[in-house]
Amino acid sequence: MRKIEVVCPECGGTQMESENFISTVCRGCGHYFKSERAKETGRKKVRRALVQKRELTCAECGSVQEVAAEALSSTCLDCGRHLELGHREISGEFLGNLSLEGDLKIGPKGNFGGSRARAVRIVVQGRASGFLEAAECLRVEGKVKLRAGASGGKLEIQAGAALETGEPVQFASGEIEGELRCPEARFTGPLRVGPQGVLMAEKVSFTELTVEEGARVRSVV
Image 1: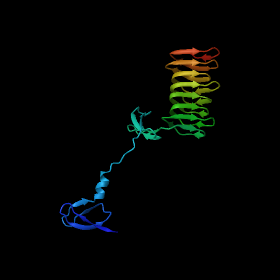
Image 2: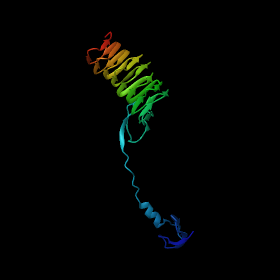
Image 3: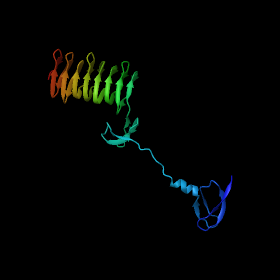
Image 4: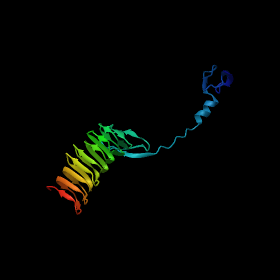
């Protein structure tokens, strides 16, 4: 490797070093110094790309934190809960629990066999058995029978679809065009039962009820 003569900035002594040297020690006075190339490299600024972020609320503890906008998963800094940030579609059998900060779709041939699923929006076309929690909306498009119950923002049951639960359901509002059968149906806001809708529950609570002609509603309270 070719060598060059370098001058110590402290004592002026000269010595031979590799032409690619980064730093060295003067053999005359012991002074440590860097090459001009190293000084130029050290002065270069690295431009970092601006990372877009969004706020995320942990479903477990309610802690609000920032994550990268394109992130598919994260971990809550307060409780350590794993957060899956993307969307998921179940087209076969799924036996584990799910917690999504996106949308969940259970396809026509899908079967959610876990004990609990949480997502912002849930669409059920196939089968499910565990508790379903939809922060914004649960839309039922097939025949669904849950051992547990369900909760969330809005409950939508399409015409021809049915939801039967073994435990109470609780939502902010409801649009029942199909059939809902459960021990108790709690709505903190308005409830509408369409002309083909069927609501069978031992107890029903709501702030406003609209029952259209042709609908069937049966409850104790």
